[in-house]
Length: 137
Image (cartoon, rainbow, N blue to C red; front, side, top):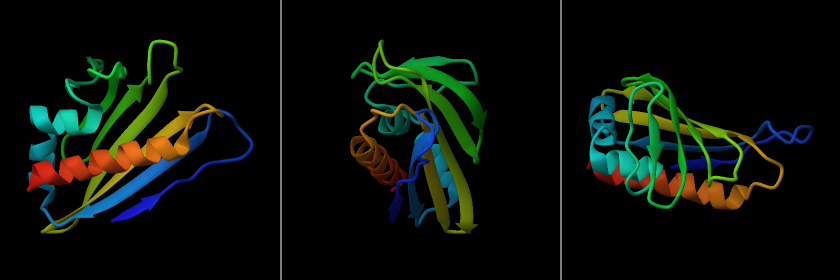
């Protein structure tokens, strides 16, 4: 498992948090797990449902957004609002087969405002990848 946080210093909207994880599961197994209700909740939060491009979602904790890009076995990108008053940010989860039995997950949360709690977000998304890994087992 690797976790990394990155950002830029000269813009209040381009900072990002990046979390990566290599799972010892084939990419089709990881994708199939993510496409279940439990897999969607693992990523978005309890009650969150993944949909096609343009579909909205909302989790029980009040976070919500819209699916912006959906490419099976490759990538899901969605807007993410912490709450009704929070600015839109963008989350991109990409996956790549490392070999026949391993999958690299990379989650990048970008367009973070200056006051975003990056430590909280890093932990949130690292925990999400852990839950996705558990669903794939």
